[in-house]
Image 1 (spheres, helix red, strand yellow):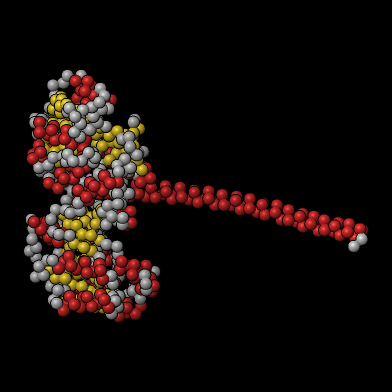
Image 2 (cartoon, one colour):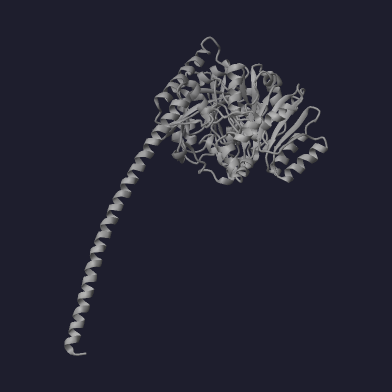
Length: 618
């Protein structure tokens, strides 16, 4: 190749690369612009999403306020499932809080013509003299004057003892421990030396408004059968209000997580002989004391706010409740182990005296069904009929039920179609003893000891009862607890029957003893219905509620037509497992779509049963 040809060749190559470079550079510039435009679009969409989310949160928040807090009754219903009310307070909240303050005035007036009984106030202290001084002054400033303040210093290392000795009020009694023994020990010593008719408690981070003692003493006079009472309290972080804590007495929630301040709790002197503080505990001993008290005496919640708690620990504001981060998990677990999961066995005070037909609709899930039936087989089968209606389960389930039937343990209907929940219940009732009461019972429900007796007892002793339902306990970690309330600790079991999702709590007693609660609706995983009530109804409507809604229809009929009430009782406890039957139903897409999602009958079954899906179903 000649020199000229080489130069020309290189020149052509240069031109080629130059042209390609220019082209690529131009394309790259265009791509950068496109990406820039895309970023703008993405940013715009993100802003739209954020705005929609904010609007949704406002609408959701307003809906909750309008529905749950629009009057005192609904506010107290809300307090049953979530005791914490976060600041700032809404207009509707303030209505309720104003009523609570007004009620406190009424309770104070109970003492106007009555002699003030002696009150003993027990106050253990250890260091932190600034907090202690404020607490003591709040006691000395009370309008109720007939009290003794027993202060037990647990070997403080600062100037606390000098502070205590500086008070010259004759109503103050001082006890000094040589060595630190813990607050449970201190309180027990003070209880032994107390002389009051009523016992109150105060802690270092608390103070009282000046009419606290008078309004609480007035509550004791108002509630002649009470042995202990508690009220609500304000929560402050330094001088900043965080909200209030007041829970309408909910035993299951109390066992799950504490919402009662010992500084807003009081009891009659007679309780001293029944219970003391556990001196093996140096944490959460106040919660454990209140729970043990609840097992042995009658407690009432009193909806007033006269106590203040200065809270310096972590708060999980996203959940509107308090975390347990300041306690080691092992400490929380230990308290729950001491508390246990058993409630009072009602069979110790009431035996079954009327026959009950337990109706169990069955679909698959042999393990759950077996556990369900075995808890009922422990009863006298002359008084308890077990009737199982199976909706075409697998052969293992059918064989198990056939064996029980052959051994005269159960009555049994075997369907060759999945008719679902409501129709199966009605089939079971149709072959039951016509004089027996009815217990509707899920195949994944588990009775605890004494629960059947408790439901029957209340069905006949609450004269206006139409339906009795127990506590519906979910095991720890069950995600369904999220629908009940944001307050419970989901690591531990809790009752789901009265819940925020059902919005079914009504006519809450002003002073609640935690025993009986009226509901507007009861989910029929377990429901006790007297035969008379069932006979006066139209039964469960399978045509209008194939798989669900029949419990709502029946509940409304009982309330509005029969003029009877639905009661939830805390003395009956039934576990509700993980609804595996519904999950199993998903294996058959057509059945799942018709039964669970649409809750309607397919044309062939509707024709066979003489049903017609209503126009509004579509």
